[in-house]
Structures are given as C-alpha cells and as structure tokens.
Length: 363
Image (cartoon, rainbow, N blue to C red; front, side, top):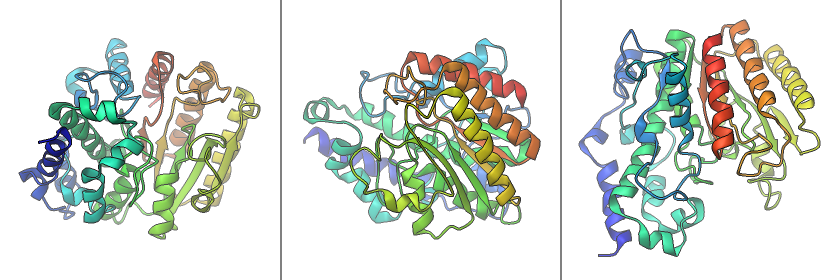
C-alpha cells in the first residue's frame, strides 16, 4: 500500500476515534469546556501543549512556525512567570466540535485529497514520498489540539479576564477551504462555541488581526454565516498572500470593518502604532457592546522576520504594539483571548516571546 494510502487510513482513525463520538453539551460552560481540557482552579490562563511542537520530523514540513509556541512557553518558565504544571493542556476535539463550522464533505475533502497537502502544506512529490505515518499523525494531532486550545481560551478569558493561547490563529482557513498551512478555521469555531456555551454573555465579538497577512479565512466565514455581530480590525501587507496573486479576494474584504492595508513605507513604528491607537478607539466608540476580544497576534510583521513580510516594524515596535493592545483591553475590562498566529525564524521567536512575557506581567 502507498504511503498516501496509509495516511488516509490514519485520517479516518483520527476523526472517527472513540473520542470523536462525543456530542457537544452546552448545558453549562463547565461541562462543555471540560471535554476539551482538564481545568483546575490553580492553573494559569495559558493554554499550550508540547504536542504542538513537531519535534520528530525535518524542518520544512507542514507549517514553518510550529516552534514559536514552544519558545514562548520556555521563555515564560525561564522568567519564572509560570511553571510547566500550571498551564492548561487541551485534549483532542470531537468531530462535533469541528462540525459547528466545517461540514462532513469538507472534513472528508481536507483529509482525503492529496492535492490539498500539495497546495496548502508545501508538500511536493519528494516530501509526499518521505512522509511517515507517525509524522503525519503528530502533525494532524497538533492541528486538532490547537483547535481545542482556541475554543478553551474563550472560557478562561471569561473566567479570568484574559487567556493566552500559545497556538492557533489559523486565519486563512474558511468553512470550506484550507489556506496556507491552515486546515481548520479555529477562530470561527471558537466564536461559534462561545456563543452557544455563553448565550447571555457572548454576542458581539471583536477580532483584532495584526498578522502580516490578511485573515481571509474567517472573513469568508463571516460573510457566509452572515455574522453581523463579528467586528473585524485587520492590519495586513497589501502585497502579500492572499493579496499577492490578484484581486480575487476583494470579496472577503467586505467583511472587514476596519481595513488597514500596509506597505513597507507606511509601516514604520510610529505610523503603525498611531494607526493602531486610532483604529482601536474608533472601533470601541462604534461598538461599545463588544463582549469578547480575540487578538490574532502575529510576529511576522517584523522587518527581520524570515518569511520576509516586507514591513518596517522593529522588535521595539512589536512590544509597543502588544502593550497598546494590553492597555486597551485592561481599560475596557472585556474578556480577552490571544492567539499567536504567524511568526517565522529565531529572531521573531525571540521578539515575540519577550513581548508575551511583558504582556503576561501586565495582566
């Protein structure tokens, strides 16, 4: 049997396992969220699993930034801000947790179509042939665990005021299409479950997306599901994916309430930070009834990021950006969930880990 045939069998095993027979129980938030992770009173509002980090396979497979969460986690421990035992570790989600956004056809297509992985995970013929079953299982479990982590982060944000998820932010995947290393639409999924688990508390949600790439995935979802209670701030490089090929994504831009396309010349620290302050102020003035803020962080805006974002933000500018977000959230006292999203290379990992420590101390 071909390597790909073995992988397809594995995909079925992952999504049809006993754990995936669970049904979502929204009778209380505690019941629902405890399906996705073991929650205890003495835990820090930090969600992470070492299984996010794909240590067993060569660099260059699947997703270039899979080490970033591990670097941040280790930095928080080094600074004695958390202990390894104090974090919340997610469990694999059930298929029903995914079906709130994706349908069965999509889940079959994503897991059974070889072209999906060639197009969206950077797997050419050589890498396809080199794949091993345990490598693929590790990767798929990492993606699924991060979906659970994003869902859980809302519960901790409501209970504790804030939550940092050292993963997630797969903002290029929509309800019916993967995109650029993103295979599950975790932002849409976490919002949909939050509204069902907390129907009296969560209605209007603000997403602040500061990754260097436009968040086209959940923006397509917003339009598809007609979610007028999702407010989006999106700062992105207008020349990079998904904008680099053509104007074909002009449709999803209709979902953005505060659309801030950037270029290298317009994205120096001072201009960028002033734009951010102005936009945040305008958004909360226009929508004073925001009940949840999701921050899709993104270290790939850095001018020395190895993915070549072609923006002009310095490490100091990144830290100031995150402090602006922290001050904004603390001032408004709105539950706050942060996802790490993009960031590539040791320099970006170092800068974002320092910024996360700074933010954690503020909260």
